[in-house]
Image (cartoon, rainbow, N blue to C red; front, side, top):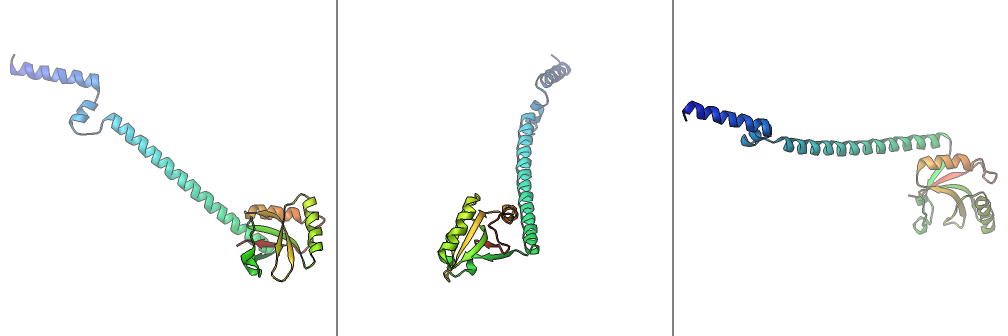
Length: 174
């Protein structure tokens, strides 16, 4: 066989292999990524982008909730509602409240009066939390919640109840 024919035969075999196997053979020979490597890398990139997007969406939800909470606090302040923290009460260290916010519908030095209001609130379907003060008074907290949005909704509903006085206030369990 002559030199020209052997080169032609080699070229023909190389061409046949490339047609049968695609570009991956040449990529592999050149030390380049194959189509399978590229597809795997693309999948990794897509997963990372989706995870990043999920983190960004979560961050936007948190920022919106924060903005909504600040707007609700402003709304509560503008409505003239009084908010006091548990720490402002004398027996704050001994209180074990389950929720962050309570609507206080009354405070009594007489335990019978506190029980009467508590039974009225329970009769209207509210969960009642008695909150003892250090000075002997007992406050009646109802509609406990952990979110400002629920607090605002509950406050509007409680104000329509027949047992609810005009001077309700909000207790913040901090």
